[in-house]
Image (cartoon, rainbow, N blue to C red):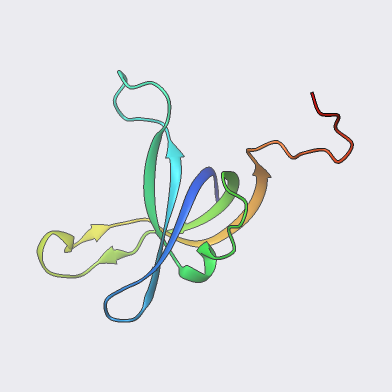
Length: 102
């Protein structure tokens, strides 16, 4: 399990009627000249993506690495697939009930 900062979740319906999902996480850039974080998209199981309610947030993600066996550019391609997620912490501070307005 890897702890990653999850920025966004996208659940959608494919043309064949099935559901699919993608999770956008923050990653460190590969280029040393780039500063900050870079968004990276992982495919995810729709039922796992549906459990991610607090965004942005840190989640422990279970990743699987299936090999695509198809035609064209996707043959023998390995894409990370999120098969499990556990909420760790929110990245946005919570509002206090007794906070005084400034």
